[in-house]
Image (cartoon, rainbow, N blue to C red; front, side, top):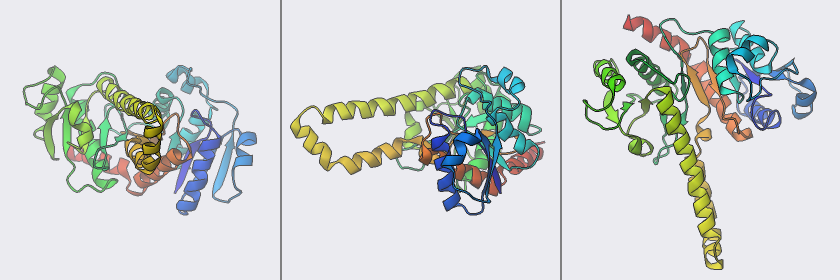
Amino acid sequence: MKIAIDAMGGDHAPAEVIKGVSKAMEAFPDVQFIIAGDQEQIQPLLQVSDRVQILHTTEVISSDDEPVRAVRRKKDASMVLAANEVKEGRADACISAGNTGALMAAGLFVVGRISGIDRPALAPTLPTVDGKGFLLLDVGANADAKPEHLYQYALMGHVYAKEVRGIDKPRIGLLNIGTEEQKGNELTKAAFALLKDAPFHFIGNVEARDLLDGVADVVVTDGFTGNSVLKSVEGTALSLFKMLKASLTGSTKSKLAALFLKNEFKQLKNKLDYSEYGGAGLFGLNAPVVKAHGSSDATAFFHAIRQTRDMVQKDVPSIIRQSIEEQG
């Protein structure tokens, strides 16, 4: 198996990206890596191995670049080169922590979309209280959606939850403002009608307040709403820990208490960190394309590689393609 890596994307590239690759090389001896980026920066960070190939380039897509224009004009950018390795069949998947919009554009224009999928969806796994997590899609690939798009998201989420996450009968929920069937806007009402007759385990509408309690294994929504939920979860977790830190450093007594609870707080922080689950998969493409968090450290990037490896091993795109064909 070969995975193409954009070494120059993300806040801590290329150092943390390469550290993550090094961890993955130790953990997964069956994986080879094609690393796209500046060889002068990458080479000193990388252990010599016949399992690694460097595609040298100094061109990079930045966070300020307009996504579609950048992908079309910067043909030698590290992200585009990584995606092209997949297109040409030299790699089985690609990963980047860079510009999200550009990676989605590269996925669509370079890797290509599965026939029958109208719009790919960006799907991270978010934490739950029980530690199992849930898949949320879409979180920003498409701000607007039609009912049939939400149906396709549910189908792709079902395949991923079953094949990669090992859930025998994934519970699929539709994000809404209430649990009753008649709740919501025209989009959710029409999507509900499609989903209730689907050949997977649709449990109905779910509310945002219940997501972290693990109300569903897969939650589908439009990209605008999904991105808002994602940012709310992330922001709430960060704010919570800031509040805890302020409370536990306010006096000598609280500092002593914090010292005794240090390990517990660390475990809680890890449970709320969705990067532990991997990156956000761009579902609906001909091959796995994974968006690692922009601020990924080596551990987060390692988990993105682990997730990508699982998607390749389970051949998720082929199963999605087959499921779409069976739906007619």
